[in-house]
Image 1 (cartoon, rainbow, N blue to C red):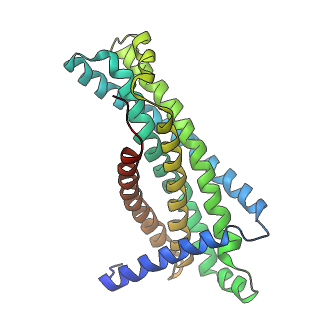
Image 2 (cartoon, one colour):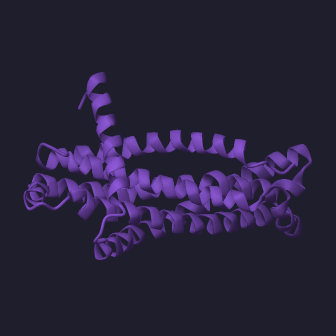
Length: 256
């Protein structure tokens, strides 16, 4: 489906308006606790294993690249700190976001899109039930919570994988690798990564919900909406990641 510049601008505005509606509706009572728990469990069940499996080669590649570079520069003692920083600051939130968008986001979009083409969303509105409050908010909160927890899992698995490949395959020194953790890394790096994961999870769920609620054209329209939600989410994630990283470097002083 090709969009004119005016159509793309209109969809962007509608997406932003829906995000504001989600934020405005979050404090509203009653809170849909059952829907939140079900969605959190579902998103976690479809993303935990793929996220853990993807984080291992991510950590391994980072460790191999940094280990080779530090050996060329004669700074092997800093390979551990550099690997941990790369995994903690960038790899963990990005891997988490991609899996949340690719697995959880597509399921959310398909579910809401199927409800839309079956006219369940219209029936809810006729009955005076707000779909944003009833369906979207629990899914957004579930994606945010699961993204934060998965980010911690990716960090642990990625650092452990990097340690294994650096020490075993590149014959690094275990003591130097572990001792260099605190040379450059600091606690705000972890908090920044968790905030990134929280924001990325919200973006993935909001985009998936928007494309699902605006799906048209029957089952084919739902499939197109799922594909579009993944592409849009990936674009927004990388732009948001750049902005948040730039702000972090300006706000938090780095160790030298």
